[in-house]
Image (cartoon, rainbow, N blue to C red; front, side, top):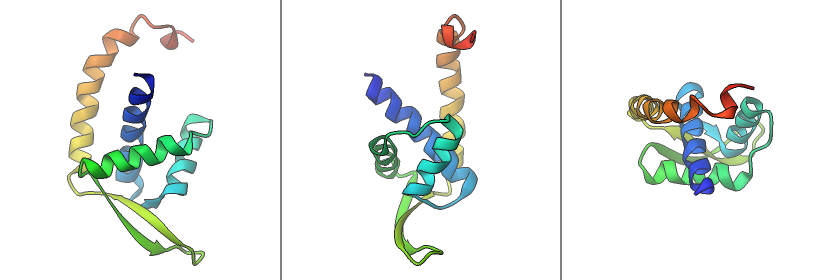
Length: 108
């Protein structure tokens, strides 16, 4: 259950990142999330989240040559992804706030 929750929340974080920053390759996604979290997320969690977003039709991927000449797989949020993200985050907030209100994570 925890792994599923982690992948789902990571998918939201990745989608928000792609909506905010535009197309990114997998390693860049991982580095951005590392900066946000202050720790390195497991590669498998990031790529599972990207796969899930593709299956849901919120993200497209394509191969392209990066600035350093390396061919990489890039991920890009589809045009309706920001609307879906906003709707999901509102719904998630209403579900999770009553749970977190009394949780230790809110106090320290």
